[in-house]
Image 1: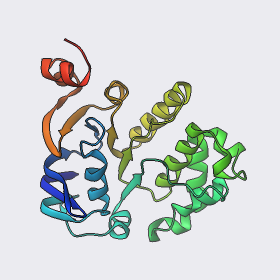
Image 2 (image 1 turned 180 degrees about the vertical axis):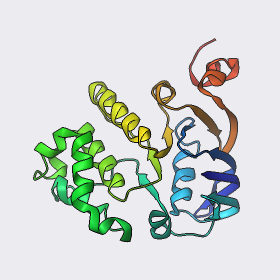
Image 3 (image 1 turned 60 degrees about the vertical axis):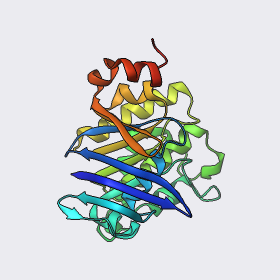
Image 4 (image 1 turned 45 degrees about the vertical axis):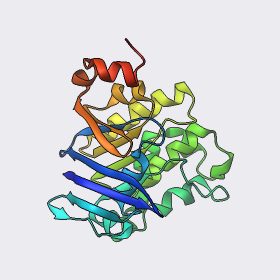
Amino acid sequence: MLELKNIAVDRGNLRALWDVSLTVRDRECVGLLGANGAGKSTAIGAVIGLYPIAAGQMVYAGANITARNPSQNVAAGISLVPEGRRLFAGMSVEENLTMGAYARNARHRVAEGLERVFGLFSILKDKRHQNAGELSGGQQQMVAIGRALMSYPKLLLLDEPFIGVAPLLVEEIIRALRSIAATGVTMLLVEQNIHRALEFVERAYVIENGRTVLAGTREDLIGNPEFNRQFLGLD
């Protein structure tokens, strides 16, 4: 479904990504792992179209999307849950969710989309008229995920979805993501909490200093001594 071929990305006068390649097959849940500052968020931002590609190519659903903008990518079925949630704090939960349905194919399905989100996160139905800024960090993350689902994505990009979320709510969010995946939504998860990510993804790529340095199934990576030493702190 998604393929990044040796992409490079500049942010301002600095090169943030030098050589990143990965493949996400249809209906897969794939992780993009690495330390803080490795380039993970830049890579996922490039996929949605936030950052222009300086070199390389991106292909989604058989089409070259290297030069597409975010609106075009959302219309094509890609949706992003951004790092830090990026909610409208002074707007209600329901208003924030509805903002995710601006794509043409989703505008007439707002009520259906809301019920889908409330089915995943029942607490949001109870708080639908409350301002998003008044929610806990975990509840705000639920809103951010719900907003992304309102565009009915085929590919869901998740950028650090567990940061600032209490452990109990992390488990609830993982259960919801598994339910979403079971409906056929493909996922690419960016995460620096590698233990958490490996509980969820089937395969993963590791970025270091803007380059892809490791790739494999969850079992392959856990069995890799270099991965254990560098990223899991095991000897």
